[in-house]
Length: 277
Image 1 (cartoon, helix red, strand yellow):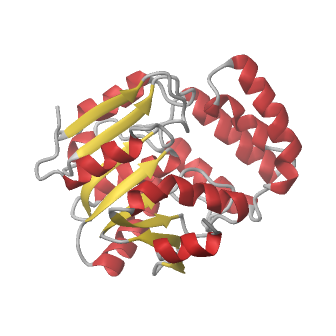
Image 2 (cartoon, rainbow, N blue to C red; image 1 turned 135 degrees about the vertical axis):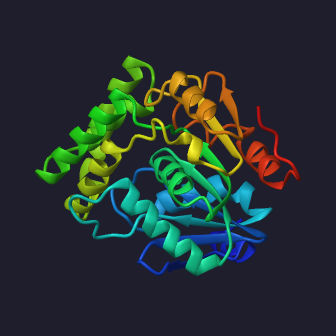
């Protein structure tokens, strides 16, 4: 299937929400807001990254109108995750006028959890994938090193290798490859990227998970190098109406590629009474 045919089939459109958050929308049905993982730029993806995102979301777009949303560009120094969540809440209210389903992956999961805790009337049902109530130490260190290197104009991508690949040997190989391709994927505005990194570094919902009213599905990978299974369990245990699914032998980004991912998300969102523990 050609890219033009696929775009027509999925009715792919691009735009910005009220505060300038870029989005890529596809599919048909009830809205499902996908909050993107960590990205070098707060923009819609291009090239192979766009193709990869569409491929990942296509199974969900069979049942939902999926809005892949990024943070607004130009994030100021000192922005907090609560600030980011408030901006998202304002935009989702303005765009949809009613509570919507929210799927947050990795860093997008941090935003989604803060959104659901601070603005419960915005989120209908919540899915958190490869994310948790706070960053684990390795993820914190890796992101800060990445942000500091990018801000200084140095190669930075290799600092993220150990958060996406669990095997030390494979992580070293991935780091070498990421070091080589770094010039092709550097942030256009490193200060913008670094502001989000600092916001997520301070993100911690310890003691706040009980404020999340939306039925929640937490999806994690058994071999996630950035988040421990204890983190996933603590997150699910703290949310009143939640269910935890751990995919065996699955890495950080392997969760969204898992054969059961789209099925589990769809069943959770379409069930009259979503299963929780």
